[in-house]
Amino acid sequence: MGDDALSPDATRMAVHDRYVAVNGDHPMTVADDAYARQHFVPATPEALELMLAGRLPLPSYVLSDGTPMVPADHGRLAEVAGGVDRLHDWFVAFWEDDPAAGEQEWVGYLSGQHVCLREVTPVRIKQVAERVAEAAAAVDLLRRDPHDPVARGMLGEAVDGVLGVSGLDSLLLPMTAYDRLRLGGPTPREQWVDAPRAAFLTPAPPVWPVRTERLLLRPYAASDAEAFVDAWASEEWTSLLLTRPMNRAEVVEMVRRRTESDSVEFVGLVVTTHDGTVVGDSILHLQGTGLSEGEIGWTILPQHGGRGYATEAARAVLRLGFEHYGLRRIVANLDVRNDRSAALCERLGMRREVHRVGDFWSKGTWTSSYEYALLREEWRAGS
Image 1 (tube, rainbow, N blue to C red):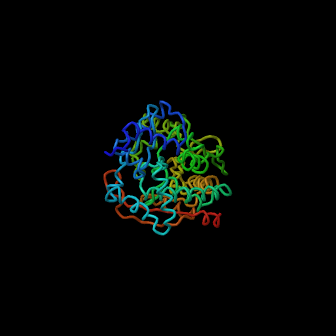
Image 2 (image 1 turned 90 degrees about the vertical axis):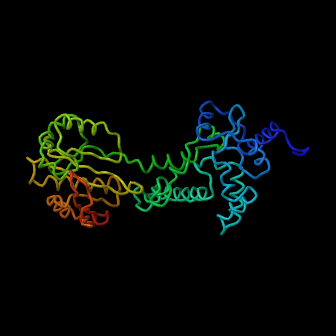
Image 3 (image 1 turned 30 degrees about the vertical axis):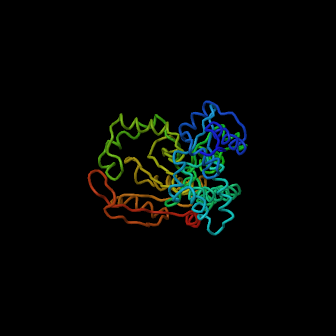
């Protein structure tokens, strides 16, 4: 070590001063310290020297006792690049088409300002920038039309990701109250995951009940269980359903779970006549990118079959899906042996898109299945 080299304490203080210059001087609470210790590790003396030389990123956090904290893989990128001396050139090469942007990102990387990322790499830095831009564009469109199908897809991809594309929910750390101070506002997760999800990807329930000419559709009540006991005990009635026969206690428990469910994606409904007689039930399971798709299902109790109740209720659920929830597509999946449900799908104007052979294991055997589908524009044209 040369005569002009700093002592370990002086190096640590110099790094701290640079950290404060970038992040401001804000207090770290006990909760902030605990968060930093959960997600980061203390920087080594060697790492501190490289930070001071501008060759590795500054700390992500400095604890209330002065301990500098860095990601567990803080020096990993240098190893991948072939050494600290090659790290800069390796890093900026990810912005080959825009060298100025690459240099700007390098400065941000060295300053430790990517503290929001679960994994600090050039690929993740680019992905977050792309997803934030996508989320911002989607939010702008959805403020004008909350049911815009393209914007719902964009926001779903940005927040939750799709096959082959990582979403912000998986890329961003939760962060802390300290981060709000140094950022001067909400954290990236709060701004680009929590707020858009609450505003546009958390559907509000409609006003219950939904009324049709003969029926009412509403959420389950505990008193509904008795109406389903005999049907669920029947092997014949349950033969084409996913669930095996259930006894009274199991039916009561099923209904209790549905009455206490706070899921916004699974809409379970009891179907009654106007005088309150339970005739069956129906579901609408919101799913897909941006919760822009749904799956419909129905059952009619044996003693109420043959009166068109299933068709009437299903049409009401389709209307609920397309008009209230703004879905762009609704599907129905059923056992190919379920001729009555297949005929109902076709009465509803749904297209049989898929016939899967031997695809589904159910009740001890491999069964085949159909998938029917209906797009919002098709439903409007047929209404």
